[in-house]
Length: 105
Image (cartoon, rainbow, N blue to C red; front, side):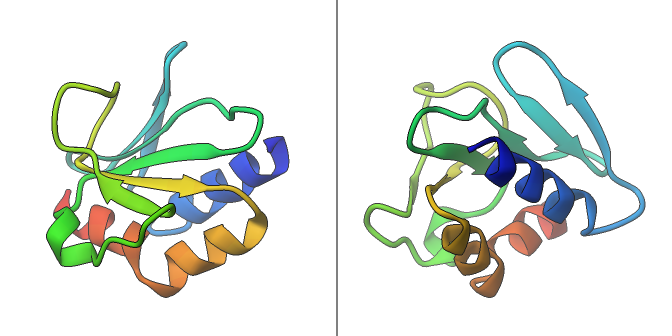
């Protein structure tokens, strides 16, 4: 999971040269003009990424992405993406989910 977290970090930072990060004990934020992504510390079997993107626009997939609107999570964004294996990262990139969050900031 640490390798997956490092790959997500590299992917999010690769979206643009204007990105900065801030880390606290609950999550790490990625910021352009505003926060556009938040990555929670890896759990045993998944890595949660919250993106500042409209869940309806993203096309939700059961078990992979969900509407995170509401006070039940820490950090930025309404679109929750659950990454398990490395291919989930590729799937998120193919669907343009990280770009949606970046464009919203």
